[in-house]
Amino acid sequence: MKELELAQQKLKENRSFFKNLSKKDRKALDQVAEEAHDEAFSSFDCLTCANCCKTTGPLFTKADIDRLAKVFSMKSSQFIEAYLRMDEEGDYVLQTTPCPFLLDDNKCLVYDQRPKACREFPHTNRKNFYQIRNLTLKNTLVCPIAFKVVENIKANYPF
Image (cartoon, rainbow, N blue to C red; front, side, top):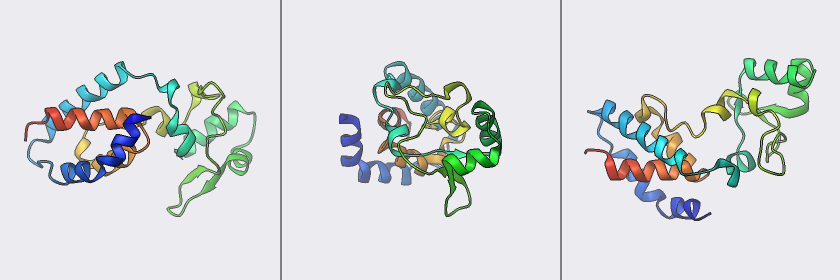
């Protein structure tokens, strides 16, 4: 995927951009990021990629675990045992990648009940965008939309 190759090539440039973002007008940054997010999503079909599901795993909240356990008619503890592990920060994450709920056509078996982290990925439309700039930079290496958002912000953010 060309965007992911470009993201790798521009990693140093984008890291510098985020490091030097103005702390003064964060509202303007939020506005530019939201517009960039909407534009990127309007021109990209996630089902053609699904790289997020193939290469990374979301964090699972207690609510996510309980909801998905019900989907599979399991107890939460059984769901955890079957699909999750605790990471070094004490969060529940998938035991394996790609995601076990990713189907061959890149659709999600549990789409309507998917974890909050999946619903919000790549997190480029969150308020206080400045606070997640490191996460966004990391996501450019996984998600073409995140890369497009960053490129759009670089072109349109008033320094």
